[in-house]
Length: 280
Image (tube, helix red, strand yellow):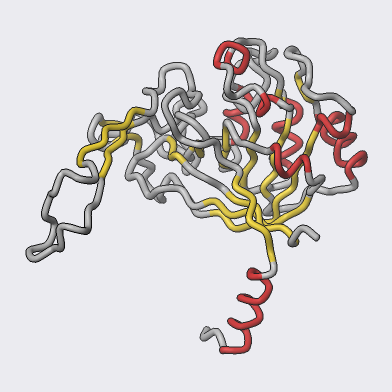
């Protein structure tokens, strides 16, 4: 199908009349990470003023700089791929983790029938439990249930539909500059009931402002991850910055997330965005 000029112009006008809110933490020295994930590390490989000639005949008045970085795929704001968690040995597409060629140091964890990542453009819903409950942060031991999700939807006047991306705010994004406070367990988040509630609604992805996404250690450690990723094919985002959306009380928006196409990747650094009506 060919997009007509008028259709494209209409789409560009719609997208142009929007504010873009970044939902990812800034990558820098000290960015928070999942326990065993390597930290963000950078090297300035060439500096301004070193007179490195990139192109023959380059004017000495022009300089450039380059840097390199390394990091774990579960460092900072990131997307868990569909190969990140298995259930009873199976990945989201049915690939078994013991099959030849599925796991390797150089190849990561490969599913047999599809890539582990997908770009996401969807309706986004923010379930801001701090706003719904009138608190700055949820208690550390808060394990959110299906009833809690229903109550938050009702308090904020939103619903959750098939194909949505659902973001959960606990207020932990206000602690991300303090590693001890941000990463020490217990950490609040969805429990098993809430994960099943999301899966039943056939959402495409969900994320939160905490390191583990779900309540940790919670009553059943890692089971919400298992329900969402291998059993339901739902992507998870972790360590998101949801403060601006919450401050503007924006609970519905256009959500866009473009992970890196890492062959066999279990996760990808990401800076998801929300497209929202321009502030007046």
